[in-house]
Amino acid sequence: MKSFFSFGTSVDITIAFTQENEQDGELQVFEPSEDVAGTIRISTKHIDHAGIKVELLGIIDLVHERSYPFEFTSSVRELAPPGTIEDAQEFAFAFANVDKPHESYYGKSVKLRYFVRVTITRSYSTNIVREQDFIVQILGTPAEIDNTIKMEVGIEDCLHIEFEYNKAKYHLRDAVLGKVFFLLVRIKIKHMELAIVRRESCGGSEKTNETETITKFEIMDGCPVKGESIPVRLYLNSMQLTPTYKNICNKFSVRYFINLVLVDEQERRYFKQQEITLWRNTIG
Image 1 (cartoon, rainbow, N blue to C red):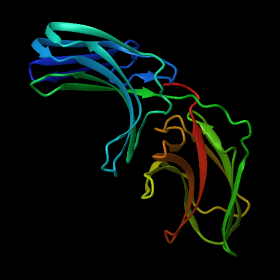
Image 2: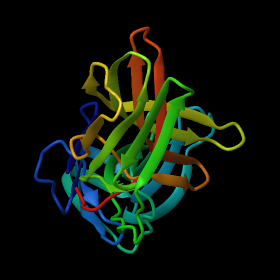
Image 3: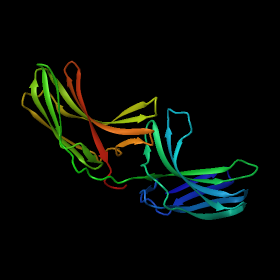
Image 4: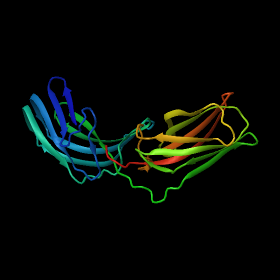
């Protein structure tokens, strides 16, 4: 991943990681155990500086909090002592064994970022700073026990439905399989929808929740009859999903739910929500 930044016509900074992505424009992906290394190219006609440094930072930035971002990992390397740069000069950098304990996440109300920051310090002028993000992904492990989910929803003497899903924990390329059983139907159902919902919970004492419907589609059109069974099959790999995150640095959590919604002819909605756990089974 290369990053280019120009400060007017005086200084150009290019950051290139040693490992390059196959697709241009995508951020470089690292696992927690991998070293973050690359080169920094500074091009300029002439600049005097008071030192050049490179940092690797991991921060959590909450949209609804005015405080500075929370920094959970930090490492710094000195690239050059005070001096002068003319034309172009390259510097190699490497961060080995730097703690990268959490996955990168870019949500609606919270961002967990990893980035490399280059700072050219100047004595009598504004420092020149360039940042380049990269992605950290963490492999999960399959659950030893993953029981079938069974739920019921009903309205007395009008509606009785059972839902059954094959498990509660899914990897990001998995498929949700299940069935919907209609045991009693005395209201006119127009259609049935299935949705995947993401909920971000951020903050401490004044917690905020941001809910987003990732996908929604119709799995039944028309009124079912008593005894009918509707199959459910939902492939997750086509969706922009992340693993489930639980209380990261006491700052935020990300949870996922399956919503099953019935809509009758009067546009009344009957729904049942079930939380599922997502985990990463592959990098990239």
